[in-house]
Length: 207
Length: 207
Image (tube, rainbow over all chains, first blue to last red; front, top):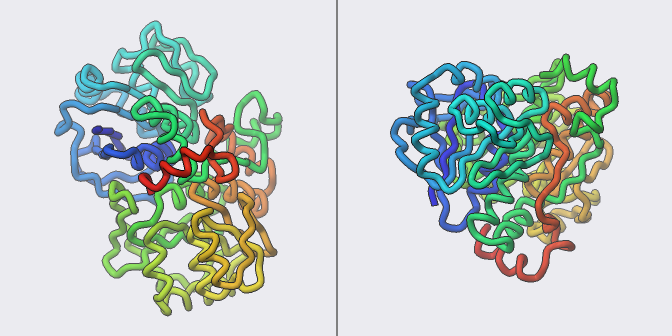
């Protein structure tokens, strides 16, 4: 089972690493990171992670799962015809084509979400709709073999669903137990609907 | 605010990157990864992440938060007197000394957990007790300025608590909203108490 995650400068770290933590433990699966730039080096959007990603996306012709993470680095790629064409070509070969956060914008720009229910980071809902998708404010949205996750941390939930679809629920749950994913956030402010107004104000200073 | 996360070969990816996603957005904070080996290159336990970590731990004399992740790579470090001595020295300077998963074993081996309530990955509870800690099966355990988190994904919950302690609850919640951390795992198998027997069997094939 071949799982491919393209990485680009300014990717959002947990978008990629959350699903990697889950899918990397799938028995018989290999998760490969591929780079979109020409240097084989990729830095995340916070700048602390500097990754050696020697395989370029052009070297991949097909895979079982394509997982496109988000982050500020998605924006320049929205105009890169070669990369969008690659997404379309690889999508023709996958069992599941998936995204986390603003990775959905790249699926949208590649034309995969036209007329489809999909999700993305809450702050990018309008952008997603511009690609003909129906923004659906759920954590994970599956339509046949296209699966989109909401912002950043939602990729972990999506990956557990994918793990069950690719193997079985017992295996997915074993991976969940291994990662001790029994979340107990100290606050209940993880969605726009739940966050108090002061938090929505404060977020402008964060992102 | 200087936050330091040591990385070593065979670290568990989400142990380090979950907290990084949270603490990296703290206004005024810098998260620095430092390497324990001599090469400046670090690979995670799944082998897919190859990181350039040029700063060595010996170059750090003090920090505000020390966060020690876990993974199989903790085991060889349990016997490295130089690294354990560094943990003790830096601990004397921190506001919070913290661990995720089996990172707690390193705090234990450094002598920081004697007679203290602490947590770690559920599978390492016995090892933790050997260092004089009282294993406490909670997701995040805080005793004064030593904070330990349970397995892998629990580092996200701990980091949100730290974010609130280091700034304020509104800021922590804004970071939670930015990461859209409103977890909805598709299964409820993330702790030993909740996982069905078949899952406990299956996990032997995973880890």
